[in-house]
Length: 178
Image (cartoon, helix red, strand yellow):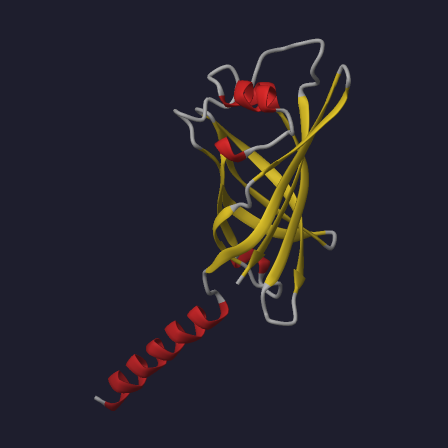
């Protein structure tokens, strides 16, 4: 009987200890910026901050996970006509596909840098990608996560091949998780 009680207590302590080191955090703030070259220069734009959940501990990155969404209809390029066009079915088709979504399947640290592998979904296309990121622990215990990566818009049916617009878009994502 005593052994059973001890094992039960040990199990409960292990459960609580595991939860203390792998807490799910919400994205508290952030930004999403992008740029793409076109015939007249570079189009710079923003989306609203990412939202979602993250589990991250720099001492155990393999236990990390991310489930992040960005509202596709929130982009701004400082050109109302272009923004309206980008929301159409020709590009993001925001009525039918309201979110850009990344869900990790593996997080690791390689050569001193972090990377998250997972599924990136835009419109009705999902592809496995590996996104590099940096993590900085803030004084309040939160983390600032930043990632800069490139994505080929044509891979996700965002527009068509066009000599006036480059295919590759550079994305800069920042999120503070608490």
